[in-house]
Amino acid sequence: MPRCYMPTFVILSRISPQAFDDPKDFKALAKDVSEKIKRECPGVTWKESFATLGRFDVVDIVDASDPKEIEKAAMLIRAYGHASTETLIATPWKEFLAAL
Image (tube, rainbow, N blue to C red; front, side, top):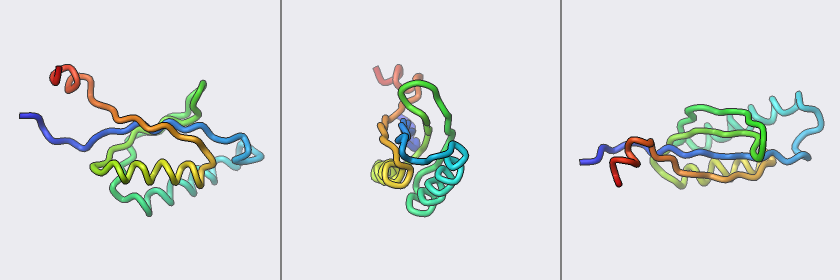
């Protein structure tokens, strides 16, 4: 019998160049968005965040039992973080292979 687990999602974000004038201002922007998500999306658990080079600026790894919470978190990132996002569901590799 498969075990129940909280699904993991990957939120990929690309920050708009117009989001801030000085890179130092990004800290305040990131803090504001993070606090808003914690308040409005209590079902989302942040596991890790990474700054990346390339197509996306930020990769967030999150858990949530309700995909609607992830949708709301991504929308908050878009609206208040001035970013575009792409969200993926992530299955642990061993569980993916076991399901084949």
